[in-house]
Image 1: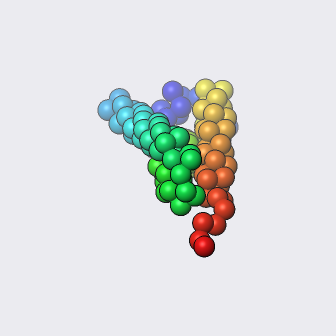
Image 2: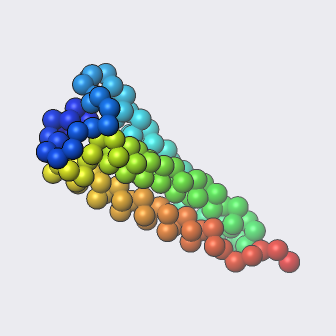
Length: 127
């Protein structure tokens, strides 16, 4: 409904709406693939960090890489796709159907950003 511009009470889209079911499926598949990548990378990061929790700081810092990558992909999916493209191009903010995804995307993208910052601000491990 949102990408087809079925409920746009205030402003028109910047370009043509997506009316093709094939494109809707492609966009949904892209979103789901990004979220699956976040889940896989985050799971790998958690597993590696748990395994190296008693190891040297350098080893633990190396184990955080998949989790940092998960946060970066999450920010691309939730901020990039939903906030930048969804809000900017499809005007999600002006319909009730679009307000929910924007709130969730903002929440998840912000959590990813803060968690990535927390992981990257580890103490310096140089001697």
